[in-house]
Length: 256
Ligand SMILES: CC(C)(COP(=O)(O)OP(=O)(O)OC[C@H]1O[C@@H](n2cnc3c(N)ncnc32)[C@H](O)[C@@H]1OP(=O)(O)O)[C@@H](O)C(=O)NCCC(=O)NCCS
Image 1 (cartoon, rainbow, N blue to C red):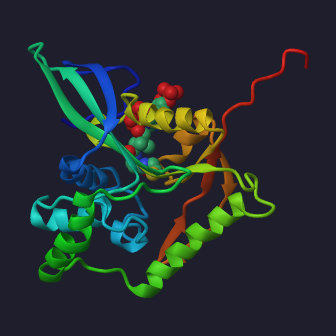
Image 2 (cartoon, rainbow, N blue to C red):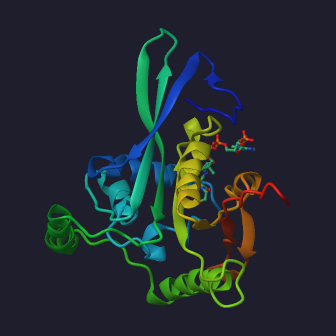
């Protein structure tokens, strides 16, 4: 199925019935790794923006992505942030109801990642290190890793530090939002994004993200604004990932 962007809920004989947002579990890790690689396949920054180069996710599905790609998506992983998946329910041409995980989003809430459960602790401190020892993941060169971290840190400071547009605000940090290219344009990204914006509005926080060029027009249309923009050429690729925030609207007072 090779879809172009559609602004309605039909493609050929396929009709989308519902998009369900729910917490992702370990079992979803392989599919999320695959979605991540597919969604960023044509991104110009992909070659330097791969999970192991950003180093910000530790032993999450993202760290597993490359390994999974090489090894047939066999390994499970752990994330202690909020990771949501979007399951699309659709009818095929015979009217049969089917469903598929079509996108996901990964966010650190203002209170930070939650504590690991015992099972996650066992996986991340015992099982994965042993697994990694026998099946090592290609690591990013330390220098590149540092450069990318610096860009992210710089943009965060420019937004939330002294003099920043959102000085001292609490924020949901949206690291990844991605949708299977086959399912893009059906409103899945929008629904995932809304979940985080609603949460931010409930807790007087903002949503912060660093956007890819593909996400930029969509975030702009959804009310995000650029708060910092720093670009640096790394390995011949211009890494420009503007920091953006979304703020809940303050209700207008009736006597103003
Ligand atoms: C960015 C991304 C998550 C959007 O997901 P999506 O499910 O395709 O987006 P939606 O269908 O919910 O559309 C959201 C809005 O963008 C618009 N839109 C979506 N795809 C578009 C396209 N290719 N061209 C123009 N507009 C588009 C839609 O019209 C919609 O706006 P509306 O509310 O006015 O209708 C998806 O394209 C993706 O995974 N891209 C690759 C990964 C990436 O760059 N992620 C963002 C940075 S982390």
